[in-house]
Image (tube, rainbow, N blue to C red; front, side):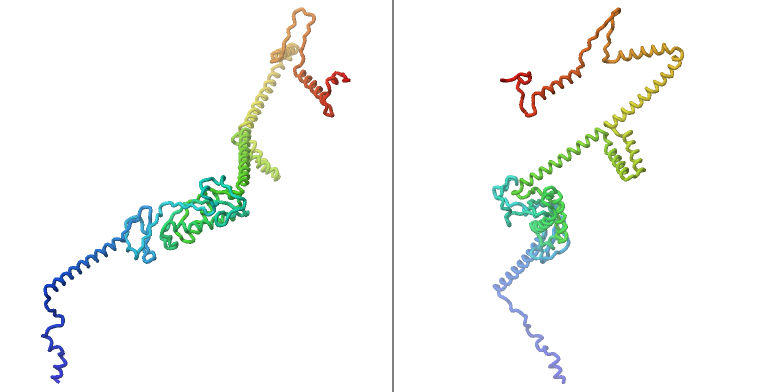
Amino acid sequence: MPAHDDDHGHPHHGHADGPGPMDEAPMDAANQSLADALRTSFRILKLLMVVLVALFLLSGVFTVEQNEEAVVLRLGRLSGDVRQPGLHWAFPYPIDQVVRLPVRQSNELSLDSHWLHLRENERDRPITQIQREHGGLKPGLDGALLTADGGLFHIRWKVIYSIEAIDRFVSRVKGTTLPDAEAIITPVLENAAFHVAAGMTADEMIAGVSGIQDQVRARVNRRLEELQTGVRVTSLHIPESSPPVQTLAEFRSVTDAEQYKQRVIRDAEQEAANVLNQAAGGSYTVLLDAIDDYEDAVADGDAERSAAAEAQVDEILENTAAGEVGWMIAGARSYYTSAVQGIQADIERYRSMQDEFARNPTLLVARLVEDAFQEILTRPGVTKIYLPTGAKEVRVKIGPDPQQRQLDEAEQYKKQAEGITRDDGEHPHPADEVGGKIE
């Protein structure tokens, strides 16, 4: 048993002092130089790898300008928050992809989807100088909107848009450039324009360009918000619009007639305002309202309301109205005052004459007659003829009345005209006028 224990308890004891398997034999000078060169190359290689890794990581530094925002896509998915203007870092491509877009500036997009197809020699000419045959529009080339009354209408669009949420734009639209935003705006605007035009007639389209702009922009923004695109149309303009050139002359005739009608209405309203202002001054509007209230109350049989309205009309006429009405009222007041004063003066004069008449009525009558003669003779237009002393007969020759002479001449000319033209339309011979006869 002890011998067995020694054999199995220390199996490696007999090899403890022998040479190990890792011991190396001494190298000669050539091998030693080669080994040193390999070790030096390995160290240089490791240093180069460290430098390359550092350069690789530093290449992920990027700058966001003042008018931009940026997002980082890590393996195709959004990573982190939106990067604001300043210095930032991300893993270099292909791990991270940095998307930078201008979000604090307006971008312009012009669309001719609903405009007439123009040839090269027509692009710089106004729509009124473009000629087309009467065969209608060409599908696939000419764009137009269909109106509610079955008409066609051409429109050019000028869109001003901005990217307001770059994270939604990149994640939902998968957009990384401005053309990606324009690619989503274009179909949305075309669809919105179709809906708006379908609810309006061609005449309404011509007269309501500003209303079309507002309606289409509202629809476009509502749809872009529903799709969570992060894009918004800030302004929409229609630089040019027109019905089909084949019917342009007819549309212009109708438009001119409508403009003429509106101009005549405006002139009539202005003339009415001038006449009313001349008649009653600046308060004519209040006066007209009061008169309308009075007439309505009378028509309704409301005596209390009509009396109140009539009192209001009287108050305006007496205290507020100007113009001819005010002048007439002022003249009536002045005449009333002078008439009352005259009557009062006559009454006082009559009362003062009563005592004088009681004392000597003959003398009073004679004086009154003399005063009456003096008043009559001093009036303008009265001709005074003085009789010489001792003359037994005086003859006064009075000329014809000028007005009567004019009436006589008019009657004479009338009779001559009736004699010149007979009932059968023939003109009399001069001999007929003097009773002569032609043989």
